[in-house]
Image 1 (spheres, rainbow, N blue to C red):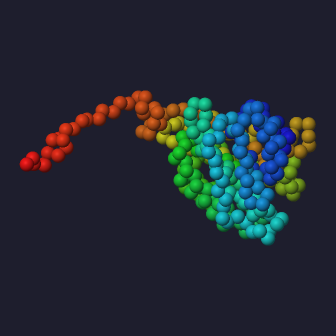
Image 2 (image 1 turned 90 degrees about the horizontal axis):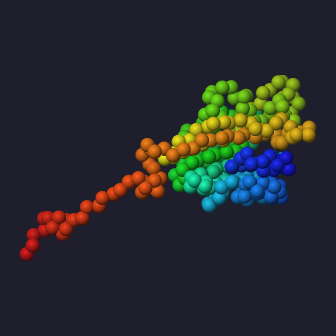
Image 3 (image 1 turned 45 degrees about the vertical axis):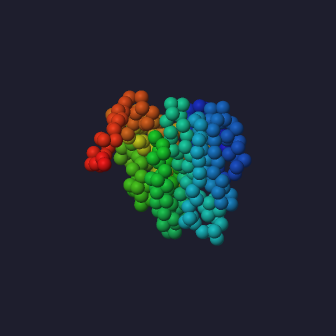
Length: 292
């Protein structure tokens, strides 16, 4: 946690979305260390132990809420723990210095646990659908939409396709690198990660991509991906262990105003347009009414 706090306090990032910060004390320690460059932060409380989701932002947070999923594992599966976290979608709206409103969503879908017998497949699919519906019905209040998190599902899966299809979000990795092999952007069970089981290392398993940053913009803005990468080294400097069992994902976006868009922001419309309102007399308004 200390190494993660030092990384995000380096000033490289404008928005940071973290998952699996299960202990609020860890969130507080990260928040304090990063407060000089990311002065705005939010932790989403939920369930018994907390959602584990938090947002740290360079920009002011003006609105937020948390939506807990109805379908989220089983309470008697104590060793899995997803149910106790009260998992769901954390949402906040931030406003940049330029006045751009960004709707930020962070989520952590139910884990798979057993690839050969995935008893939570339906749970993840419903969580993905629920998340996509939430984004569809709330995104219009902002100029930019960003979803980031541990979605525990690989590209091409039903849950992944549900999110993409129902929201028209762009996968930042695909946006930058195209349809290149996913192992180039793997985020879990990679060979270099210290937490990857030895059995998978012996099999030379490249890992899988299950952590994402997705985005879209309104017609008033153009948005493109300049960079999408795994920014952290395989191990914490000077240590023999990785930052996490999941690799971090960072994306750099370029956002510009689209002057040819049909739906410019209202302020821009007022600055560049004039409206003439004709005046009518009573005779013009009611020509068919005969005077006595």
